[in-house]
Length: 317
Image (cartoon, rainbow, N blue to C red; front, side, top):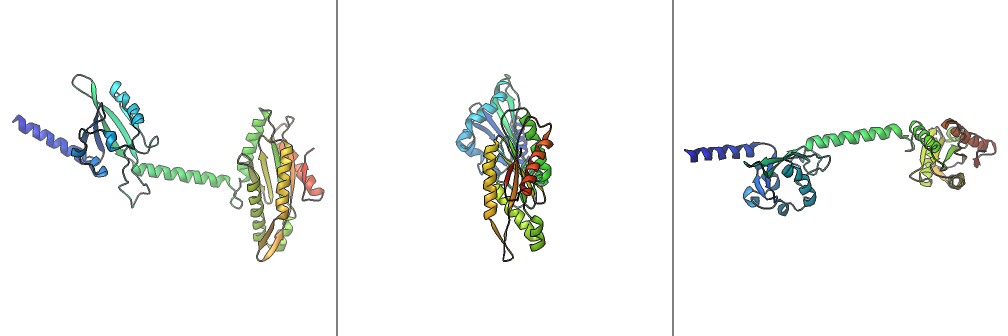
């Protein structure tokens, strides 16, 4: 009768381990496998008899042994469960995604819980790994994050030029002004405007005007550093803030932009269009009461460049 009872218990345990939709792996202190359920067999193609009493790392050499040993240590020594979420590490076992049609994932994302299994003596001689397939949740969350990132990008980028729009550029400019107030390093500001832009629109049409703006934007992108912040300030007017850059260096950059524009010939609807730009420069000064004074200084320099004949660079006095 005792034998029948033992067999019955073994049978329902086997059915339980085989029917649940999570992975169950029991490891001893040497990380030899004691239990390997149906979920693990289905996704690894390793039957329990192949891996029983075999070392986990021999079958899965891609698992970082040092990291996993350190991660499991609290379960053995402190009798405390350990949790590993997919955001920290996408998976422990590199299983293929079992929903290749409905999911964009190349592998199964997993959450892992490591439970201590105490013996009758109270010592933890084994741990149980529970492997949860969280691929749908992970893909959904990453898709949402990608969407939010794209929306954030759209909210700060000017659609025509690919540069920062005025709102975002002004935020960055104010931050740079506040940073300059607290530091001694130089920074410079450029205001740039396409000369006679209304004439371009009136002569060739607004679509041609858009192409001129895009061509100018591309010259700006190629002429500045990653740390510089350029934006479309409005219409044909642009602004660039160059952190940690003295005015002398900015004059060189400004002249380079002006010459590149002067040499640029845009072909639109079989018509060649040439254009020039005027540029005003203002270096940061501690006497500025706020960021708008700095902006006004560069804007006045730009106005002087326009008034003195256009197609030139003027440094604010």
